[in-house]
Amino acid sequence: MGLWRRKGPSHSSAKPYLSYQVPHLNQNAWNNLEKYSRSLTRSYQNVYVCTGPLFLPRTEADGKSYVKYQVIGKNHVAVPTHFFKVLILEAAGGQIELRSYVMPNAPVDEAIPLERFLVPIESIERASGLLFVPNILARAGSLKAITAGSK
Image 1 (tube, rainbow, N blue to C red):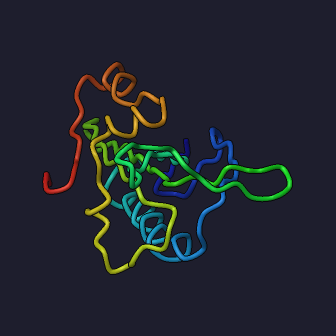
Image 2: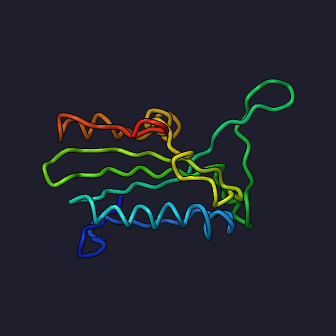
Image 3: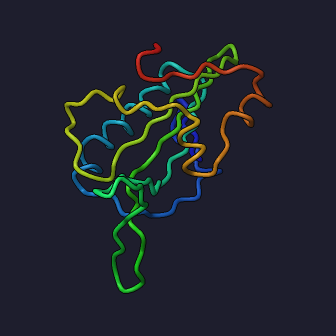
C-alpha cells in the first residue's frame, strides 16, 4: 500500500512488485487512474492506495465459469486478467471515503470515464482475499464507499 501526501509520495510502507500489464492499458486508462489518484492529494489530507492483480473467472461457451490466464517467460509467470486499485481517502476532519476500481488487463478505451470502473469493495475483497472494510472501520468507525452512480 502506498501513501501520497500533499508534499509528495511516502515510500515508507511501499513494497513494489511487478505484474505484467498490457501496454495499451498501462499507458492509457490505467495511467489516467493513477494520475487521478495522485490529484486527490489536493482535496484530501491522506490518500492511501492499494493496487494488485486479479484472476477473475469468465463464462465460456459451455456456460461454465473458468479462471483462465496467460503465462509468459520460461518461468511461466501468470498474467493477471484484471487489476484493482483501492483508494482510501482521509479528509482533514477524519472522515474516510473509499473508492475501488477494477480494470481488465486488456486495451481499454481511455474515453471511458473512470467512474465506469468503480466496483463495490466487496467484489475486490472476495476476488483478492484481502479485507479492507473491517480494518478501516476498526480505525475510523465510519466509511463512505463511492460506487458507480453514488456520488
